[in-house]
Image (cartoon, rainbow, N blue to C red; front, side):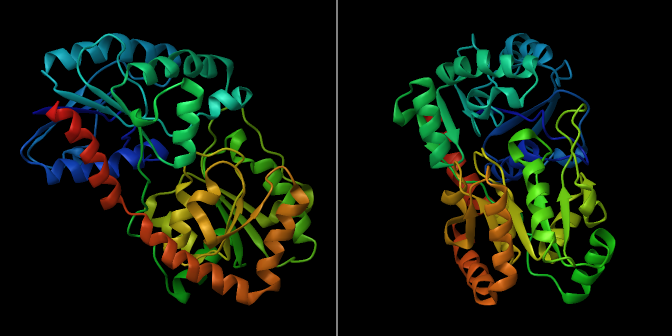
Length: 371
């Protein structure tokens, strides 16, 4: 059978959310199923690293899409032509986009519906695209994969879909997230935190990630714990974004921008704790990465986050800066709590692996191949 996968987010040296998700699943199912031919649809020149096995055929399907209008052209015209040209039996789209007119069976992953609940978080032309097309994609797709039970329930309710049309398949975390040596920790602290112990936040600089309130909370926390640093790992989602850092903590905050996966694992493993304040998430992969790294978690209590972190985190209202700062302080004041969170994380993380994610995803794809 010929299976096509939307690989537009597999960008060399710049893998983030959708890209990592696509990579981890795609490379496994291609290698594990040599009986099928996989057509990977890119929208620009691709890296040979993404030719995972002999049954992989990489295809550039233009135009390059990083604007809603180009997304419409790609999904409505280019994708339909490519599905027909390569005689595709099944199409899987890890970012939710699909063609509205093809008869080819289509499976899509919808990670979250923040654009429905917090539309002002996005530029008007982006939110309009999502709010016009994603309900249509959800109706058209033969099946939808969600990444948490929270997201599944939200998709069903928001788009009036039958429960059986949506499957929940949790994400994983890469194997290079693990415990690291004291020497490595000291090296990372020197490189990113001026030698200080530090909290880390990982995620794009996007309104829903709540970085402004995190900085306010860290400012309050820092009044008592003056030797601590905050490292923020991630790129600006929108070019015109600006983040205000309170003057009193400017020398205690580092924005790294995008880092490679190896450095990210070292930063996570060297941190005092992960502080994760988003007010809307579909999954929250940094939570799992922290658990694998033996790092305690201080997390927002909204949307899917308690579902994913479970008893490996302590929680706060992401709109309450004082509560966020107070929960961060608890990790300094209660060493037994820190140890408990780390131990709980070691158990909790056993529920998440990319091997498991890939196998469960394949079972969904295979079901529709048989049809």
